[in-house]
Each structure stands twice: as structure tokens, then as C-alpha cells.
Image 1 (cartoon, helix red, strand yellow):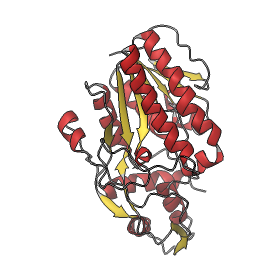
Image 2 (image 1 turned 45 degrees about the vertical axis):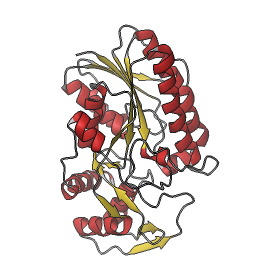
Image 3 (image 1 turned 90 degrees about the vertical axis):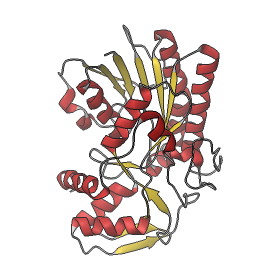
Length: 311
């Protein structure tokens, strides 16, 4: 079935991708330096046939012995807390890391997939967001280190495709949640669930009217796999088009946890997107893909996981 290198393979999404690829008969080389990933996410894979782990910073030269059929570049801080605390690393992994992994794909004749993000759309002026929308990004704002790193990564990927003939894919990932998210990574799902489980105030930024769309991880990684195996070179949105306000989302989690935790309103961070919902028409037509897991079902599974890790 082929040998896949997955960078950021010990992260939330990367570790689930390792599971999926192994389950479908691929060999997997998981590469991570544990800046935001965790050995706990992949400890069940150590010793398994077809799985290899390499501790490495992909902003440095990437060497893999033997054949490589697929390179999936998922290494990157991915939450506001992470990329505000690690702005230089975020820019480097999106630029240098993309360059190094594309170079490996070129050398090995491998198919390449870059994990991009809905953040390339910035605070969008078009709703929902289609792949042909160029975005509304503040390049010098605090979130610009992540947004522009991913926009550069997309441009570099297309340059390698056009100039070097590398077989490339670009997935734009919208809000995703599920087991193995870090408790303190600052994203809304782990923040709300951990606060609710501790019966602490649930912190909503602004008035909570900003919207988000939440996709369960198993749906997302299935879409990523289908995109990788397709012939589509241009960016493709993968996410859940079911939209709700952040305040509604907080109330949903509070009800599912069964807590009386109050909701506390805090100032809205700079450049925080007011709306976010993918147009997945392309994924539906091209990949025969759409999300299957209902929100409450996915949240119950995620809450059960957080009950085991929240102290």
C-alpha cells in the first residue's frame, strides 16, 4: 500500500493519521520533535509492525532511508496559544519545514500533501468560504505568523508542483475536535470541556456571537485520505458546514457535561475571525465525502476522553 512519512505525527491529527494509514496497510514513518505533540498520542504504536518513529525538527534537513510513497506535512503549532508563544517556530515550520519536506518528496518521487488551514481565509468577507476566495489576512497582526506561514506553505507547494512536477495536494482544514487534543492548547473545544469538567467559568471571548463549524477528527482524516488518493492538485476544504455561535457551543458542552459552570465573557482577541464555515461542495463532488458524526456524538466521545486527562 505504500510507505508514508507523516510529520507532526505525534500531534492530535497526525497521530490519528498514523492510525488510519496503518489500518489500511501502509507503512508509517512518524516524525515529530514534541514541541506541541506528545509521545502519549503514539505510545500504542511503538513495536507495531510497519511503524517507525523519528524524533526530528523538520525545519532542518530531512533524511529518510529507503522508498517513500507519500509525504504528509502536518508539523506545526496549531492553536492560538501555541503560535503566539512560538511565533518564530510557527513561521519556520510553515516555510523551512515545507521546503525540506517538499525536497524529500521531490527526491523520492513521493506524493505530497500539505496540511493548510481555514486560517488562510483570515477574517473572511465571503461566507461560507470557498476555495477560490483569496482571504482577508492581517500579515503583521499576532495571528499573522500562523496565517502567513500556511499561505506561504500553499504557495511553495504549488511552486514545487508547477516547476518540479511534484505530485501535490493541499487540504484546508477547518475546526476539528476529538480525542488527543491537549487540555491546555487554548482552542475552544478543550478549553470549554476542561472548564466544564472542573466546574470553572467557561470563558467566551467577545459576546460569543462569532461562529465556528466543528468536525469530528475521524471524519476529517477520512477526507484527507480521500484527497490524498484523488487527482486534485488545488486546495480543497475539509470541514463541517454546520455552523453555530461560540456561545451556543459553550451552552451545548455545558449541557452534555452536566455542569452549572457559569459563562464568563472576556475581550475578543485581535483579528479573531467573526465567521467561519466551509463550503464543501468540492469535497462532496470530488471525493464523495461529507461529515458523518453528529456533533453531540462526537462531543460525548471527546468529553469521555477529557474525563481521563483533566485533573
